[in-house]
Amino acid sequence: MTLRVRFAPSPTGWLHLGNIRTAVINWMHAKQAGGDFLLRIDDTDLERSTDEFRAGIEEDLRWLGLDWDDYAKQSERFEAYDAARDGLIAAGRLYPCYETGAELELMRKTASIQGKPFIYNRATYPLSDEDEAAFKAEGRTPHWRFALTPGEIRWDDLARGDTSFEAENLSDPVLIRGDGSYLYTLCSVLDDIDLGMTDIIRGEDHTSNTATQIQLFEVLAAMKGLSDFSVPRFAHMPLVTGADGSKLSKSNGALSIRDLREDCGLEPLTIVTFLSRLGTPDGPQPVSAIDELAGSFDIARFGRSSPRMDPDELVPLNGKIVRQLPYAAVEGRFEGLNETRWAVIQPNLERLGDVADWLRLIEGPVTPVIEDAAFVETAAGLLPEGALNADSWSAWTDAVKAETGAKGRGLFMPLRQALTGQERGPEMAVLLPLLDRDKILARLRGEAA
Ligand code: GLU
Image (cartoon, rainbow, N blue to C red; front, side):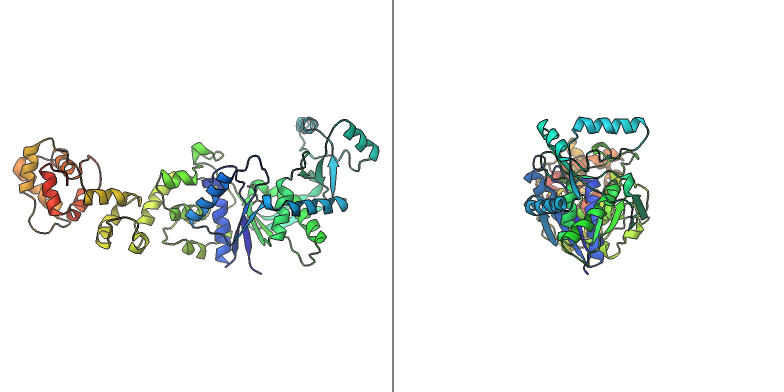
């Protein structure tokens, strides 16, 4: 049977380093087994879900190279949810509850004061016709809960190991709100059955949901007459914390994929490499393609404690990845880049975007900055003859030093400013041999070239 997993974001915000990790782990887990990765858009909350976020999520996943083999949208499956609802009601497993939000809140508070977990008491289940009529007369509309069967719910979690709950210690989950809208639980379980999921990998905040969902899987599969159905395998991954060990948030590491792409100029491969190893003892090794990561991926490598995410580790990793990209990976991406230039520039890069800065200086025009024209003119006369190479810069500056007595910043800065028009930038010894001799001489004369 083909292994099938899904990533199921709600399109109510942008993807960030925290939630995209689930996608990365799912994708890797599927690909290492030659399985399928499905993108499921959990957009039943019609008010908070937007098409802009949906499109943004898809764009981010594509950019990262996490292509999907199958696709579903919950908002297109309401008929299937309606049928499941009707079946569950007919089977006596879905029952109406008439408590108001305030009443439930009071029950929760009372339990908390008594130091007990809140477990819904099934106060009106079963409900007499008279009571039901009385609630309706008060103008109350029911929400609907799934009736759990007492007993142990147990599974062998791929991340947590043997996991068990007693159904008696869990509240019957609400599947339908008072306004008739569906909660995630019913939709998710039905989708997981209909779309043939074999493995469900998500954050450990879903662990107790899983206990109730396992019963729902069994009931819905039986209603569908799926006699050889088996409940998917689960992996509940420890949640990532920020670099400071506290809950992940915008300020301590949950950078959005758009920011990382647009403002930080990181390679998609850097982000995927980093996230596919975060939480394992294996440091992120630079690779040149995403498939290499999948080849060595093993969900059993993940530890049971919450890993800390430090986005500062991304830039050095990005540098390592960029510095080992073959020319073929960048060919055609920058006008003016050729294999010779790439070979010289590449060892100096932290970000691929820096290539554009190098090319701008090489191709010009650069407007020189010259404060001491006489000094620069003297230097121009001392530029080594013949083709410039990796030693030319030190030979040249030695000669200028001997002639003028200038040293340190006073020696290097006027030459840098004349040749690049700026105070900072690429290493001059590397840049110099890439510059055309005529351009060098023109810039030293103060001409834009
Ligand atoms: N839309 C759900 C969430 O983002 C999916 C959870 C799941 O993977 O089942 O929490």
